[in-house]
Structures are given as C-alpha cells and as structure tokens.
Image 1 (cartoon, one colour):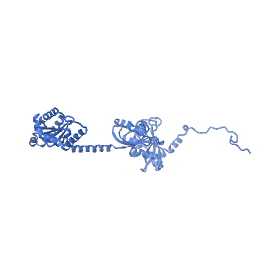
Image 2 (image 1 turned 45 degrees about the horizontal axis):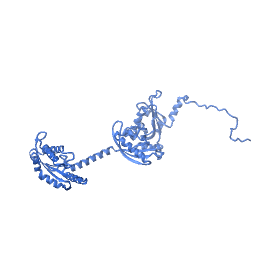
Image 3 (image 1 turned 90 degrees about the vertical axis):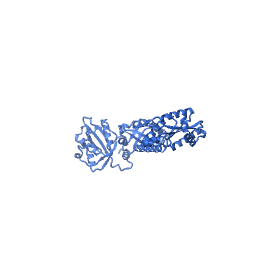
Image 4 (image 1 turned 60 degrees about the vertical axis):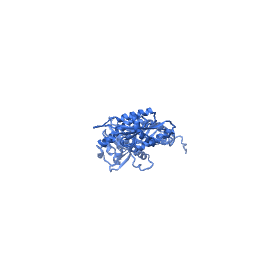
Length: 442
C-alpha cells in the first residue's frame, strides 16, 4: 500500500469543469422579486411626493403592516416627530444628488402598534432613472441592538439626538462630523458642512475670534479644553448664540479630532443683557438726576473729590475751579405756570449747560434750581471768564416751549483754589458767596 505525501491528489487527474451558475441578469423576474422581498434590510419605495409605492415583505412583517396599509400613504407619517426635520432635509439633499447614496443615519419608524423602531437609514434618489423613477429608502433594523450599552449605533443615535450640538473637527478646523441638532436647530445639513471649515457657519464678526481660539486649542495639545461663545448664522439668516466647550482629542487614534459640544444660549445672553442694562439703569439712577440726566449732588461731590485726588496722585500743579449757577426767576415761573412748565425749563437749562461747557468739565444739578460745574483742568482767569459769559448768555435766552415762553436769568459764582489745598466744601461755599459779585463783574 502506497501512502500519498500530499504533493499530488490520489487518483487520476481531472479536467476542471465550468460552474453551472446562471448570470443574475438571466434569473427569472420571480426569483429576483423573491430575493428582494426576503433580504434582511427593510426597503421602501416612494414617488417624488413621498407617497409610498412599495415596501418589501421584510419591512411589512417586521413592522406589522400589510402592503394595503401603506400603499398610497406618505412615508413621513411614519417618522418620529423628533426626526422629521432632519429626514426632510436629507430627502431634499438626496433629490439634489440623484443616484448618490446618502450618509447612514439613525432614525425611528412607527410600527403598526404605535411603538417606534430604531433603524439605520440610507436613501437614494432614482427619480431621474427612467427604469425606476422612485426614491429608494433602505433601513436596517437596530431594535435588537438598541439595548446594548456598547452598541455603536446606539451611541451614535444618542449623540445625534442630543439637545446639544456636537461637532468633530480635524486639526485644520474642518468638519468631520456634526450631529443632527445642527440641522434641526440651526438649519445646516450634515452633508453640506462636512469638509468645510467650521467658521463657515459662524457670524462674520466672530470668525477671526473662532480661528484664534481654535488654533490655541490645537497648539495646547492632547486633552486640552477651552470654552467660548460664538454666533451661528442659519442659512435663512437668523443668528443664535452658541456656548461651546471643546476638548482636543487629535492624539486619540479612535477619535483623531477636536470635539466641540455647544448649547444654544441665545435666551440666556438676552437675559444677561437685560440684567446688565437694568443694573446700568439702576446705577445711573443712583448717580444722576431723573429730570435732567445730569449728575446729582452726591455723585458730583464724589466726582470732585475723586478728581482732586487723581490730580494730586499725578503730581499735577494748578488750580481747582468750580462754578455755582443759581436760576434767578425760576420760582416765579414754577409758581405761576406750574410744575410741568418748570420741569421743562430745567431740562432746557441742563441741555444748554452741557452744550456750552468744555469736554472735560462736569455739570450737575445740585439742588432745585441750582447747578454746579467743575472745570476739568482748572483754567486761567481769562478762560474762566469766557466760560462764565458763555453760560450766562445761554441761560439768559428765553426758553421756547410748545405753547409758551419762559425767561429765567442766572447768577453765577466762581471759586478757585490751589490743587494742593483744594477742599470741596470751601470751593462750594466760596462760589455761592461770590456768585453775585462774579456775575456783576462779567
């Protein structure tokens, strides 16, 4: 008995025979149809309006429908409400790219019993193909895997349906991924942004800030984090504030990108702005006269003391000059024509004062019909004289109101003290005491 060493098959050599396999195109239509009906994927065919024209047996059996149940109904009626916006945009995107399959995305379809089935979905428009003329949607059932904690599809779906926007960017700031929140909330379709720089969706005024911020994050290296607020501009023009938290995971081979998660804080930013404006109004009300808008007495006193202290700290030389203005006939106007007219006169007087002082001078309503002016840099006697005459002439002009005219004169006193010895109380007392003399001298 001879034992073969395996170098050649035992027995006589045989000629190879061609396999008797029938080409697919020669298969009977019935066999192709049977194969289409039993493939494990769920297949749905629709016309250009989304009306269902056919569904394979796998879909019908798995989801509990009959063909008669679905034919003629709209496919979007079976989509979970939270997925509608994204699916509608995906449909539009595929219509614009006939014959090109879309990205695989997670979605939920409604079963006949009203429950929702998790699927991976991919669509393709064959509406322009004369042999088909339909939109084809292929779905893979993921329900049996949805409960697995380590299931990639489940994790993908969780990220995709997060209330936050999630981006993955490469080292150059180009989109590698964006979850559907970007589509549903901001209107930017995933298919259209992948490959673009992420600044393309930002407000033009924020793009430079975003570039600098992202560059610093990349340069900071592995696991570096950063936060920023930027404005996202939707394709239809609306602007939303996005607070972004980022982490650099470029060195992680499983991620190889920078992860950005963002939350819409438009309402929060609006509330912060309103609170800030309210605080500014309260601060302004605490330091300004409500009628004239000028500094009030406490704020003026504090400003004078601060100005003196600041000039001393800078070791300046010179004088401190203060003017005290007292309206002559205001009480008569107020008593005879009423408080409303009196208030209008005071408002006009305040405006004229501000128009005739210099840029660095401080003006305040010090009392009922008393106004004070602190000259910002002192000034020579000639400069003070010019200012006295200008203010006196401005306040002596008649005040023209809607239905009447009022004339009030003004008495102005001026006081001057060396910066080194200047004292607010003394300045005010001197200005008040000499106001009659100073006015006569002009």
